Amino acid sequence: MKNYTITVNGNVYDVVVEEGASTGAPVAAPVAPKAAPKAAPKPAAAPAASGAAGSVRVEAGAAGKVFAVEAKVGQAVKAGDTVVVLEAMKMEIPVVAPQDGTVATVDVSVGDPVEAGALLATLN
Image 1 (cartoon, helix red, strand yellow):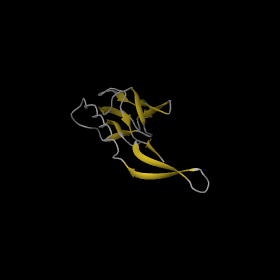
Image 2 (cartoon, rainbow, N blue to C red):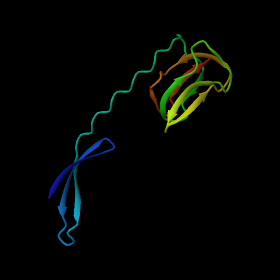
Image 3 (cartoon, rainbow, N blue to C red):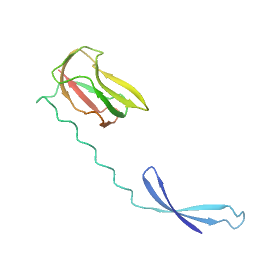
Image 4 (cartoon, rainbow, N blue to C red):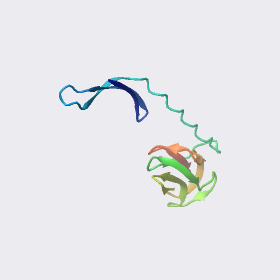
């Protein structure tokens, strides 16, 4: 009988492996999982440079990391202009303005992890 500690997707398990009586092949018998390590706290969003948020939301289409912030607060943008660039699976994904407007807030910084649907910026 051998004891092993195995980590799978951040969950830690103690596993006992015993020799099988009929085949001699190892058989894994899971033991109660250990307490999972605490996830790191999410970084706070970058403070908005403007006092009021805009009414048009610019949201992440996929989970990833902020690679670049192309627009600044107060900048006029046209529909299709790149506001933020995300990196996901080693690809750069531009997130564009859905309509013409002025950037009211930029809610992320370079390096921030984001989930799909996360608010990246707002427009007026």
